[in-house]
Image (cartoon, rainbow, N blue to C red):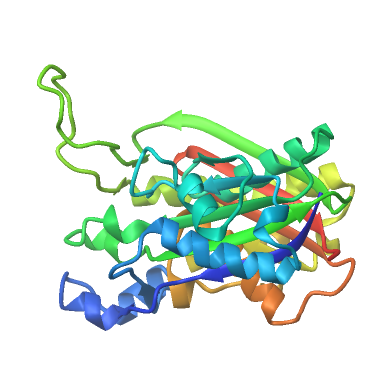
Length: 318
């Protein structure tokens, strides 16, 4: 498998740290130092599906193929507007595709879970050649905007990649450890008159210190694991595209892996943590800056609720 096109989209509305300081007790200095976010994008009237459509169209244009040529669409999201139809089905309709489409989710790790699933379909050799992988999140709808520990972190957006047959997907790693105490998001509001434990609303709960400890351990271990699987040295990696959760996590990984920060793609200052969309948005930034050249080695990694983590090594060839 190889990536032949990327795309991304973020909504227009910018919410700065100063804006948030009028809503909760915080400051620009504290958020920048502790998290690395300066501003984030939030939706006013667009859904996660709307984001995904716009990112998908850019990815298809980048790949030089039409929606009709797609054989499969996989969407990672935890913030779809509907359980049925799926976000993938809505996107399929809006871009004019006719192929099968489905949602999957593994929180912030979801894009690479979806990417690995795309590789499995392509490797089967049963007619799945061109696969569109999208991660799209409207995190602003599930954030408690009165909780300063979480509302300063997240933003909205989508990223997409078109993948096809090839030998550029060198290694991958997926990890899950069931844990409802560290990161938790209820799924539904009260409807049943019979069930005694319905949740009143859907908002992110996060134990910040436990999440941080999990992330700093997994980002390093997972990159080492996929590098070993790919038969390369850490020093062979040209770029790291990490989940944009916290600048301190990325800085820690840089030191532990002995890779300069210049090799890490960082856009958390502009977009915040867009959950599963953060890795494909950052990858698209890297592609559109024109820095990648044939044969470059890219490590991508993410971590989040589940608990879950994911990583892969890609040899760039478009």
